[in-house]
Amino acid sequence: MMVSGRSLEAGTALLTGAFGAAVVISSLENGIGWSAAGVDAGTFPFVVGLIIVSGSVFNLLQGWLHARDILLQSNELKRVGMLFIPAAIYVGVIPLIGIYLASAAYVFGALVQHRRGAFIFSGLAAIATALALYLIFELTFQISLPRGLLGNALGF
Image (cartoon, rainbow, N blue to C red):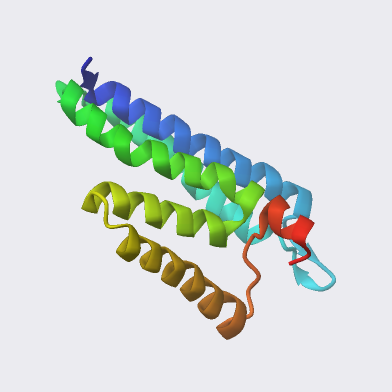
């Protein structure tokens, strides 16, 4: 299986365009424009979403007009999938198990796969990653990161 530059550019532009559209739609719920208190909460995300959608449309047109030949061969596509699939799973499980546990599992899996059996090092790096996220965001900046359904069920 081979992937052309045109299809890769189109797929990427459609994916980023959908993300931008979701940002625009969700910011409308928060209100855009001015209120008695000043700028509404959804104004900045709305503008950012419009920029993302505009860039996506531009990339879609550029990719379509300036099509390249085959961009990825089947072995290269397999390597991209080995990076993309775990990252997609990581993002997908954050709402379920929270960002700390998901990040630790992602780092552990990536390092074990890369270092072939270095379980102790991978485990320590995974714990250090989760701890660093907690220390930096929760304690230093006092920004609460997603704890997921598991964290909510456990009372965190």
